[in-house]
Length: 421
Ligand code: AMP
Ligand code: GLY
Image (cartoon, rainbow, N blue to C red; front, side):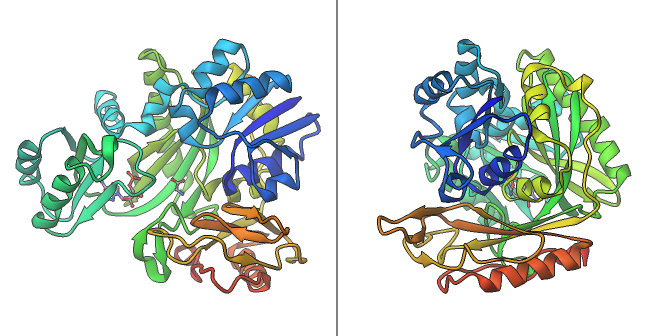
């Protein structure tokens, strides 16, 4: 089978690493890929939002399947264009991706289908938004409607701060993405990311992971795209997962199909668990990054037939997924200044060293300079991942590998996995 993989982050490197192990794979091309992916397969410099360019590439290589990593490609309509071209795509249509790309759509959908989640309101003007805020107690949760690269959520401690956030968003801080704001009830508890493959009707649970969203140790500092993950996550007990599947995942797949926008790809439910009860924080239409990395390490089954089944409607016939007994962890190495203003261009050494047993290194924001040096080009730069017989062993292995990477400018959290240890 020939596969086109779209994306350039650590998530896509992990997908490439796992797909490359499939006995069914005959050729893989990634666009645009990164230096880590380039060590696995051919890469082509086509942007993940260049829909026409990606369709031409899929045709050129005779792709049997296109695997889409990032949501920006879905929002650009890549899956719709591939459907027109008759190429199977693991990734949702633009309409289905609204489950992530529009928080207003997503929250309204949750209300229509009675999914357990926070009470909310959607506003395009400041006055009614301010009035709605009065009905809540602190802290207040204010979100920009559209994609804002993980920065569109404000948890405000006071009414004053909450009003300022509303004014800021409606005032154009996030451009079109903030033309509407969602205000919702604050949910207490512990967060976990749960994944399910969807083929339009059938859903298949695809494991869970816990992310660390804050930049610094002790869950301090600004929110980021994620500084590290581990899986399995003890908070996602079999009971919690079963409830989430019955109360959210299944009704969501059925509801989206009934509304004419079936899900074909992965559904990522951000859950808040309080007293064993899951509530929905948000949906995403893609694998989490860096959640995907630990799931790929733990997955024993061949990934390729599952992604193809999700793309083509064959999930019902697939055998259950097999997972390793081991625990997996991912530590993100980030550029100085991340998340606000990451500095680019510093040189990273030591990535080719033997990083030890059970360790996998995924590139997230790197590039090769003309002289061959590996440099940092993004906020989250490297993902140091490890398997271990339990989380403590996985963690020890990952941090031992981090110590071997020579990148004085980079920073990372030293407490990934603390909740489970
Ligand atoms: P989102 O982009 O919607 O996932 O929000 C980013 C982060 O903000 C989440 O991962 C949560 O940590 C937090 N958050 C969002 N909505 C709520 C809420 N209603 N209650 C508590 N925390 C929330
Ligand atoms: N790690 C969180 C996300 O992918 O949104």
